[in-house]
Amino acid sequence: MKKKFDVFECQRGIDITVDNLMTLDCIRITVGDRWFRYAEMNRFIKHWLKGGSHRLEVLRVVVFDFFIDRLFDGLNARNSDEKMVVLSHYQLAFNGFFEVVRSDGITAGFTFFNGYFWFVVWPKDAENVLYLDSF
Image (cartoon, rainbow, N blue to C red; front, side):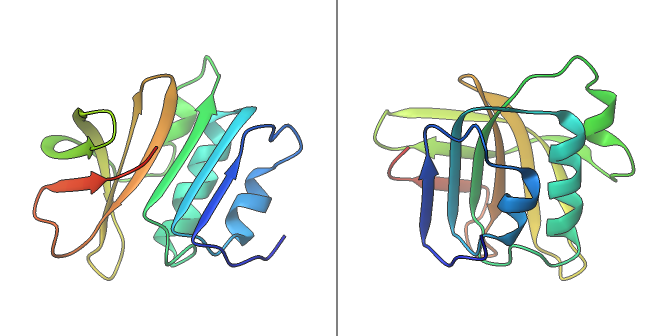
């Protein structure tokens, strides 16, 4: 796919693969109607940790799998309640992330909320709150 968008949203993403996600140069990625596996999200997180998807702020996908241990395989992730995402449009907030840190010090968190797997990259100047105007 190797495309550059600010926002990539695909509600009928049955044919989207994790490899496709890793080639997108986007700020926000949403894929619906495609159930990813934990091992695929693990691959995506490792891709981000190695410097891939450098503009990404938010990845939101559906994950359906029974083997959650595959999500954490080889990741140095810690549980954290310190940071929060605020969905301004819906006046909702959520916290409780597993955090990973890239070699340049940028932190990302992942969690499940409202039926989706969320991978959120914290801007350096955002303190502990990330405001999202639309989703």
